[in-house]
Each structure stands twice: as C-alpha cells, then as structure tokens.
Length: 244
Image (tube, rainbow, N blue to C red):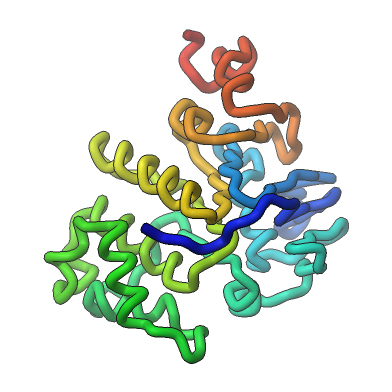
C-alpha cells in the first residue's frame, strides 16, 4: 500500500490564467483549484482548453496573465523539472515512454531527480500497485500493449512520490478493460494520499471518480461542481453523456 501525501489543505490554485498559441487565445481568465486528497476532473470538447490548463500547471506553456500557486508558492515561471522536484508529476497524453528502454529503465528515469532515495524499493512499490508490469519488467516499453504502456507511464510518474499527479487523457486509445483498470488505479493512488488533476474525454468515468469537476467550453470554465452533481446536470448529460 502506498502511503505518501497525507493531509487536507489547498494544494494547487490557478488564478485567472490566460494562455495563447500565437494569436489564438487557448484559455482566458481561467480559475480552478485542487485540494489535497482530491480527484479533480476537467472535461469538455476537444480544443476547449483543458489540456492547455494542465500544461500551464506543469510549466509547459507560457502564462500571459494570472498566477498558479502550489502549496502557496507561485510556480508560473518554474520549469517542468523544478515542478517535479516540488512534488508535481505528469502522465502526458500519448504516454511518451522510452520505447527502446525496458520497463525497469523507464521507471528509473521517473526518479532521476530524486537524491538518496531507495530506488529499488520504490520500483517494487510501483510494481505492487501495477502488477501487470511485474512479469514485463525486462521487456522493452515499445513492445508492450497500449494498456501496459499506459500503466508504465503512470508508474513512471509515481516514482517521484508526487503530492499532485497530472493525467492528460489517460484512457485515450485503451481497450474497455484497461479503461476500467486505469480509473481504478487513479482511485487507489488518490486513496493513498496523492491528489489527481485529470483531463479526460471520457466524461462519465472521469466524473464518477472525481470529487469535483470543471467543464471547459471555448477556452473558459462555464461550469464547476461536485462530480456527482455534474453527472446529474441536464446540461452536462446533453453535451457529454449522450443525453441520458
């Protein structure tokens, strides 16, 4: 059982942030937050700005205005590697593994910033959480199935023992059985004390596991509520849940 990240408090706060790609404004005046021990979902149509918001948190895009605070400290001008050392990890869309490296080597790369930690013990901890990787530990990442690769990307992000886990479209391209597994693992990770900020096209499953959610539309947040209330919202049902 994983045991990091206990406590209840405001962990992440994005305040009135705006991001542009050239002349195109991707998000404008967006505000959201994540508490410790929370799963927060961001849903919305493609191009609505949710992945841009996630990238802004991780320092992958420049913020035109506004601020992002992590544990009360501004991180808007901090590089992604510094975010990792502060306790924020990212599972990127498309997994972005090292295909010619083994499962174990990919996991080791996830902990390269840590100093003085017991890497082998942490790898065994990850393999306990993600047992599908146990028998694959010496296989190269490039020969794993898509679902196994997603598990590996998740495990690599957890090697830093993050306080906040960012996940960008984790169910994309997965079989239904692996979609179920990935969401089950996110619940398990959260119950162990790691907050999760989840960007996901599968709105129903994202809201089913989320404590709270934000609905993006054309670069802005137009709804926010508990996951349960958003699931029951007529507007959300019509737009994202097939009208049922």
